[in-house]
Amino acid sequence: MKYNRLGRTGLYVSQLCMGTWTFSGRNYFGGAIGTLNQKEATSFIARALEARVNFIDTANVYSFGDSEEMTGIALKEIGVARSDYVLATKVFGRMGPGPNDIGASRGHIMDSIGRSLERLKTDHIDLYQVHHTDIITNVDETMRALDDLVRQGMVRYLGVSNWEAWRIVKANGIAEKNGWTRIETNQAYYSLAGRDLEQEHGSMMAEEGVGCLVWSPLSGGYMAGKYTPGGDAPVEPGRRANFDFPPIDKDKADHTVVAMRKIAKAHGVSVAQVGLAWVRQKPFVTSTIIGATTMAQLEDNLASIDLELSAEEIARLDEVSADRTQYPYWMITRNNSTRIPTGEPVPVGSAVPGANKK
Image 1 (cartoon, rainbow, N blue to C red):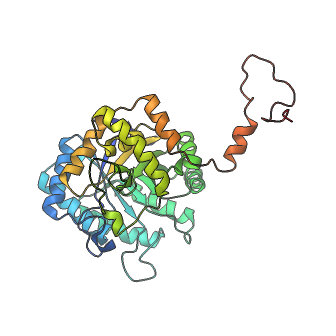
Image 2 (cartoon, one colour):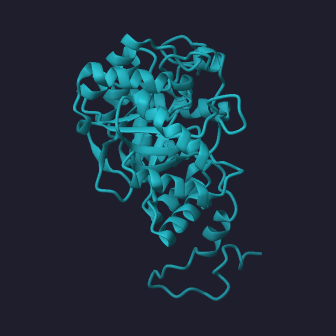
Image 3 (cartoon, rainbow, N blue to C red):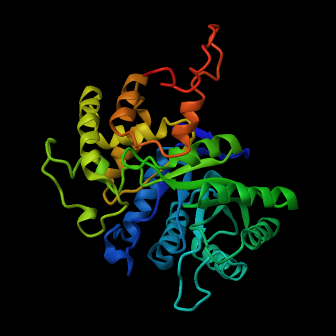
């Protein structure tokens, strides 16, 4: 296993993180994500720990508390020392029918933390993440509440998930101004079929020292190649037959899978391993969250840590999966084409590409 520093902290986490979204499935998207029982969940976590994965991610809203509960039971049954793993969970999701049973308000955060600790059977959470943007609550209120949890010893580090880049920068500016605990991680969707993150978040995270934790690195299994015709195995309906998420451009994804299959064949590995390796080797990625519904899937995902794609292979996948550059980034590129001196004089009027063309 390989490890990366978590944001700007002194904590190290494995480059693969054990995801628990597939645990239980009770009243949760009709079980489309996964329906692993306690025995299976325990065996999955045990296998991940055996492979030297030291990072486990869950959320209070996953199967409405079942995932946290099952994760806590598994860790107790395995008997692993608390200092040997980094435990992450989240707050925001709707946990009841009331108007305050959702969000990132001080009230909901304070109500949720104790229940998560109880379900996880621990006295502290290593990484506490705000699961989504709250369009109602002021960031100041959220950050003060989170800082209080750190000061009380219930939480050690803070993260967010699915936030806009500007909101993360704003939150950390507020934290710095007030001497509060900063956001260290951003858990975000990123894959060969979903590269939106590169447009704004990638540079922000590198500049601000915010670690990136990737969810759905295979786009709900689509980039494992099992939905695209032309492979060795028949096309499977899989999870997307009942839960077509996250949204992707399937035509472009299919073209990307074709390129992935060629690379996979050259290395003697699965298409899924190619997709996971591509994500893992991106310089702004700290850890990639893997989820599985079978032990065979988990083993394949774990094996991806040993696959190193060449620069040429990464460039090929970058090219075939490329998104259209959004404004203002194409304008920035266009008007900085001669900004770095090359040692040669630049003719006046050539600063803007095409300016001298008729």
